[in-house]
Length: 304
Length: 329
Image (cartoon, rainbow over all chains, first blue to last red; front, top):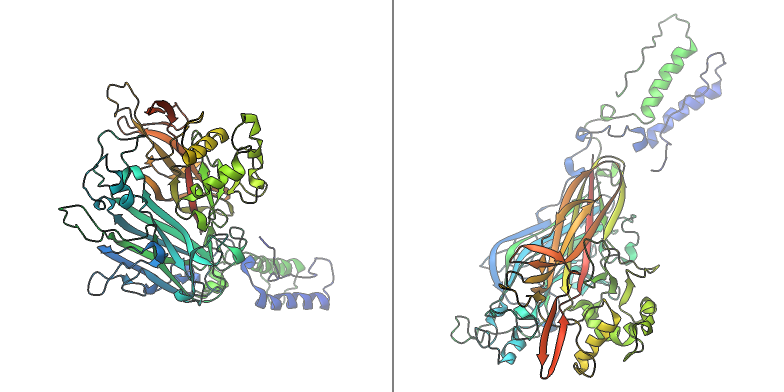
């Protein structure tokens, strides 16, 4: 803690048995007058203030408006991006169908908030949503065929997906952002700390291997089904916890003022969307879509 | 006012005695010099800009940990706050983690000479972090001055009692097909065999593909005794567990984890850290044993050759993000 006590007052020259001088009286008066302009936290007793002293609860509570949070109840089927497309925004809602509530879009999990580094200190962005992709619907047969490896390995292996929160710098638009994961080699990437999900080949494409096989070979109906939860944070000043905001990788640099926009993105490892070749299946010939929903995405701001 | 001002009365026509004046002035002065409180401040008169940052909430945002991968070589026992290796994460590792650099590890950094030699010949292992192109930045058994294998953590001090809220997320990636980095010899053999096939005096030492599932031979009901290689994760604040996962199997080669917990702390210095352990979990008996325990060997024949292979897989924690809130007052 610093020791800026310029707001303290002094009483000069008042001692029993000594003569009071003009200089002492003037020094005392000056000290009390100057305190008017330099009262600080050091003049106030620690724990001496309560909520009545503050203008509003905004000082410590989450003060953002409805554009800073969005949600979508329910589930819907979504085409996942092609591998060649890289990172794409996740389209949770659809016009005329289930829509995203709140935020800045009815289609995307997209939020924004005004950032004033003089007023705001920290922000934490959190999201959680459901994701399912039925790998088992791919391939040419419903059940395992130990003598026909190729049918399965090609279509069912390596269906990996990544999810991330893209955050723009204050004042930037999403179109200006670099849609890459922020790493040491891509320090301008605006996607922070992504997560990945994908099945082991044994559970998706390759139960016929010699090693580790499970005796009752499953029917390859395994699906990726998971809740995806992510959290990222940003701040408006340099602290011991984030000492180098010029080159930060996990913390969002919010030292400038402006509108901050954030959106959920995803990308897929497979080059092509796959169709279901299972003969007699209800989905035969159809493209296998991902299921997404039950989404929450919001920003929590701390002023002081 | 916080303190009642002492009653030093001075009446008209009194001769003022200096102590009365001094004591009153000192009382006023001491009030102003650090003991003002809500009785001295108008209601609703302070706004956020007049309050020092971190007064109510401080947030520690993990920054330096997020860019690395933390690799466990599987022979670790018990809960640990250190991985065996700290590895590079970048565009090249985007789908597989450190596995993407397997050839580079095998060829350039890991083994020298590359084709034969006793354990003593693999001294180049000691200089891995000095190789410019090595994806391995540090290892637990030889700490680097620049890098640490310590899992994400925060240390901080609080001047008052506070509530600590911790959020953590990351991706757990089983390094299927990588071989195990427990031992340079074995890693080399597995890497070499994956390119050229086993035989000729070399054989696979570890599973290089598939699911880490073990069922002992000769057991009456083998599935009850079967076990699955799992990872477990927990958040610890000052030694107390605030969030912990169960055993998470390798059915998913990659999967996200999210942990959140809260705990009150008193004033002083505190530490938040992530810990991990790898275990064999038996769904049949609901028991876990350490991943290093036992020798789970799968015997198989390929043509006329027979092989024993250990069921082991390394595990990497990728893109971890640790955020700690400290709520006070």
